Image 1 (cartoon, one colour):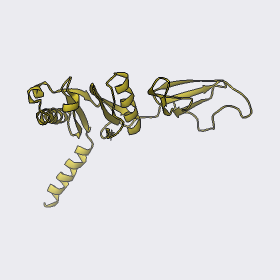
Image 2 (tube, rainbow, N blue to C red):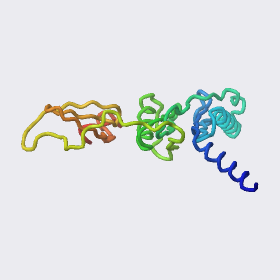
Image 3 (cartoon, one colour):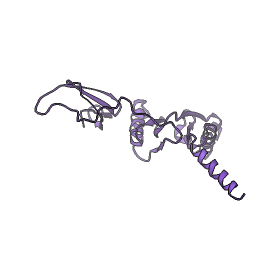
Image 4 (cartoon, helix red, strand yellow):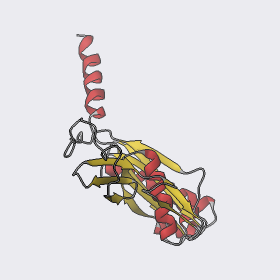
Length: 200
């Protein structure tokens, strides 16, 4: 009879591990730097939202804008597995989730911060995380054959590429397709960071 409670505790622990790890990010519009708060890997979305809102209100009070605490709102929830990151500039903060890697989430969040003209977007001390708990395992899409794929050696060939941020696909004229990650490079002419499939 003493084994039954231990079994129930173990079963509860195993079942709770199978649920989603929910994330919510809250802030006060116009005061994001002073109020942004993320609740990561919570057992329910409701709990994540409550923790994020409470953290936002607490930060508002600590930063001398307690009158704005009631304006805290959830502005981001993670919808799928992957990396996430929060990047702030002088004019606001944003969150990006669901990336293939945590580093891609960071790089994408920096890029989006700059595209929104948030000014002096942070490049260090960035809050980032990985979350795939409870999400269904993704199946491989159109898996390419394992044979070597590339341009014929000793010949000049043409290719085209299509990119979604860092995730690129290069197609050679012989029909061979190669998937690769584009480097994230600083363009001194435009004064901004960008994905460069041809390299830095």
